Image (cartoon, rainbow, N blue to C red):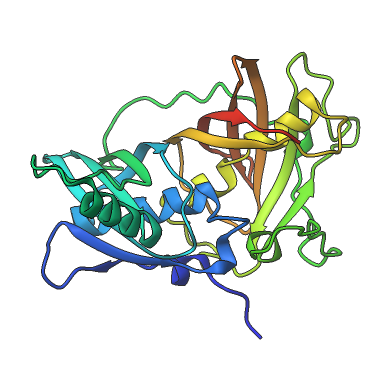
Length: 299
């Protein structure tokens, strides 16, 4: 039996009557209690790429604001192209799930409002910048490769699936390894709480040697929760949090099966946790940087 594939399961389809509307289905294979936040952002970005319809441009950066949890199942993204220039474009996407659409329709029907206003059913709002990947200019990469991520797990190594206590299958269809170098512990002695991990999809999103769709990078990048384990927990127990915002900067093409995650908690205050995540390819290339804000929940 084949594993679910993230590309197949978030394939965007244009609406038959509206040029600005794109449909997708996030299956239960990519949820925890609800759809994993990075998966939702990825589905929205893929829909926005389809709506933009510019093969000459590539995703450069994106920011997602999570307004409501997204139930696995059908979702739709309204795409608005703000600017479509010769070497770049800016796009907005508003993703909703069927639950939010039904609730908004019910609220409007029962409100008795005479203004004609429609409740905003947005579950996740995403803005994105697409640019020509061949734009000329200098390249400076000062970010050092963490020693824990110097070597990816062996392809024929023992599977190390995280025990899944969630009702949906995200952890069943991905593989995670806590990373440790020869002279380092899994949880670094860095002044900031951090965690280094290796991640891969059970069914790869790209063939050997081919680049990932950069819209998928928020999935491993949604990793602030791992840094909260040493920040607030005992080093092993999870800490509850709900993502409010996730920002992505695409730095280089991602190739290979494994992607290294270096997640750092930079601040906890006012009931919020904030952090920075750097993603690394097996070849030691810094492929993306993300910043995340999450609201703390009880354990």
